[in-house]
Structure formats: structure tokens, C-alpha cells
Length: 167
Image (cartoon, rainbow, N blue to C red; front, side, top):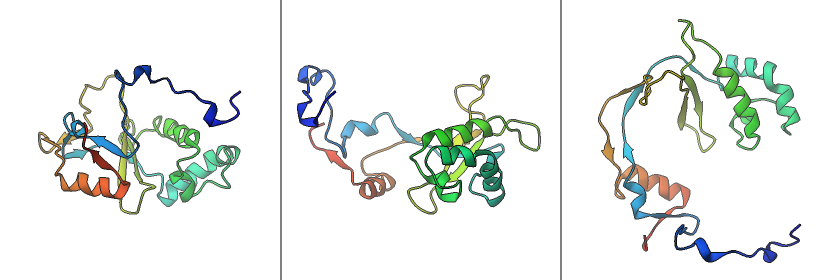
């Protein structure tokens, strides 16, 4: 057992093949493989934060939430990132449901724990889905992301990220 983090020896042998940056720094090349695309979502999406959904989830998963160290299963608990096993179990169960038309639920729509008004979606993939999800109807072909992108600059500012001048 290691008694102190100071006792850990870091082997620099892989530094040349697998260079890393300090936390909070991004290489300029980060933008190269990424693009921004606008699309419309189709299908039925579960909304766990809705009062009726939350009541259903509470009845089904409250015991699990308590076993995982939460006081209750409420709106705060479903946005809490710590007991990942809870949200994973809820998502696995939601993925078994069907919408009113009998089709599988397409995914989950939820509020981010990082702030009000930040809507996020989980899109479930089905075994027979093609490479591009049929639940996304593209509205444009996509534009490459650049360092000057105002949305990217805002996200970096909010998260305290900076560009690395070296890479």
C-alpha cells in the first residue's frame, strides 16, 4: 500500500509517445476533428425532471438512491453526478420503454447540472441503427470549429480552459 502520494514514482518513459498537457489546457489541434452541426431530434424522449416522471423514478429507484448514499430521490439527486450507478440504472430502465406509438423511447432530455437553461439529450442507439442516427435530421452539413468560434470561447471561459501555445 502506498502511504503517501509523494512515494509515487512517475515513469517519464512514455512522455515522448504520449505527451499530455497541464489540466485546463487545450492544444490548437483540438478543433481539427470537430465540427458544429445543427439537427432536429425526432422520437419520444423521457424527461426525468418532469414532476410525473420524477414521481415514477422515485417510486422505482428511491431505495437504490438511498443505498448509494443519497438522502432521497428528488430533482437534485437526478442532477447529482456522484452516484453514477443511479443514473445509469435509471437510463437502462428508460431504454426499455416505448412511446405512445409503440416505438422505443429515443432517449432522455434533461437539464444539465452545470446551470439552468442548459438542455442536454441522451440518444439511445438501437442494434439495427445506421452509423448516423435516424433520430437526428440534419439541418446543415456541419462547419468546422475554429478557435475563434464564439460559443467555444464562451465555454472555455466558463470552464477556465486556455489554449496551449506549444501544441
